[in-house]
Length: 146
Ligand code: RB5
Image (tube, rainbow, N blue to C red; front, side):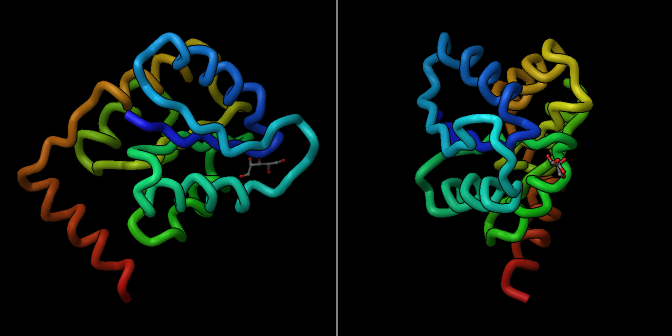
């Protein structure tokens, strides 16, 4: 899969660790910044990751800020994006299985490194369950055109 990654300064260190972790896999990575820990605005990076996924340049995104909240709110403003803030391996797996989340959002200030990396792995290896969940995801997608 092609994965677009982005963070603000609050997620910069965890993004670097996620990239290091994923480099040993077959996934293709695109780092959309931030490229250092200088203070920046998370909406810019949430939107960049969201746009990369929405326009087909990436299959999925990983967006990281201090809490995982602001960057998810920003990414979700891009039509076609379903960004989910997760806090553990189970929510990371379920956001793919039930919600077909196409952007995984993490909070560097809330997650231990191992939980964060395990959550990334759980998300990337999970599969959308379809069935009744497909109808619900379609309803979410229709909200983009309201
Ligand atoms: C930046 O200080 C912080 O507000 C940001 O990383 C994020 O937590 C916002 O939701």
